[in-house]
Image (cartoon, rainbow, N blue to C red):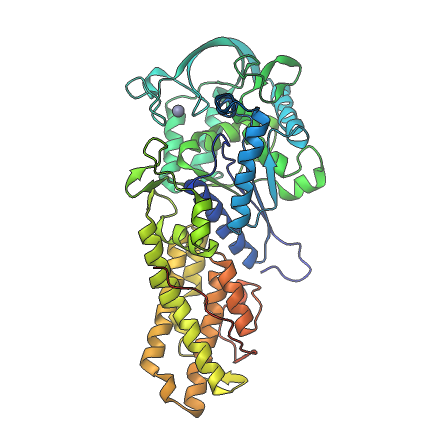
Length: 499
Ligand SMILES: [Zn+2]
């Protein structure tokens, strides 16, 4: 925690911005929740957290999807971006900025300013080019990167493109990037993803195309400064969103207070853009590179890859009609390991809610509050017997390693220990000092568990804090106090059984 009088430590965290050629799926929800859990945790540490998210609208994919639907690209972007905005709002994502990249204004100026800085540094040049392009990835592939002639990500045949484009001198930054990654000045978590990025560097970095003709772009996107015949490559524009959200072109003082990005939260498919292209662009523009990149895996559904043709796309909006945002948030972090692929199954979601949220947490709070109310006491004192049941340092260590599922597991282990304590002490048989001491232990434990659970299930934690009459302020409150005082009021149940 900062000492009084010190400026708050800042923490700038950002999700990637999803393409909005289709409505959100469960994988997007996972990324938003991971970023939000980290953001809320850092706030509990007393940091000034800035969480950015948004929608990547200048993709060629959006123009093509709109043409298919017979609507304007603007309309498609508005419609789908709105669905993303509704999702982040209803999942309780505590974002500071939601950037839509097709809105002319700050973002266009920022992307063009970034371009001009790279250009001024001699890193943008024009050349005739022929290459194999996957629209799905918005990426040129070399022959040997393809699998049986198909895009490894989309299993589709890339399009042969031949035109004059602007290129970014990525090759110039090869050694600098290698140095940044090996010295962990840019830390990629998990480590093996960093090694993947280093593998790309060792294979040799080639300059990449950063524009396309207006015709190939279907007239959609941000024009190249000084050349109206070319549209900026969507990745150049999308990556610039991290600067836009930080007020790069509009408020220098605020920008200086936010930059650099402390943590990017991204999916494994876009590691090379964030660990290589993006830092190189920043180096070229004379800006600081990000400190850390968290790379999460993909979600499979009942063991199968999510795909439209399999009809197994999980719509988070539909889930939100059946389950609370806390239930979904809890399930996503608990069941999907932070660094790897994970499987979504509605049955597991229901099991987790019934067994852990309702059975462990809800049950504990319900039992203890009933006993505490019945006791008629206003202040509870005793020997802190349960304090050793949780190692706050170890929970914090998992958080700083970004092992969110591990942090959550340790907190829930504590909740189970508290239930076991109730069972062994049988407080309903106790009276006087003995009863008071057991309740003191349980009330203090619930208070601490609620603070630690706040990043994961904020609505539930706030409910508990109201019932027990305390405020959720910071991790430093996670120790046993001399007594528990607070007006205890039960307000219904925290969870209901899902059939
Ligand atoms: Zn692809």
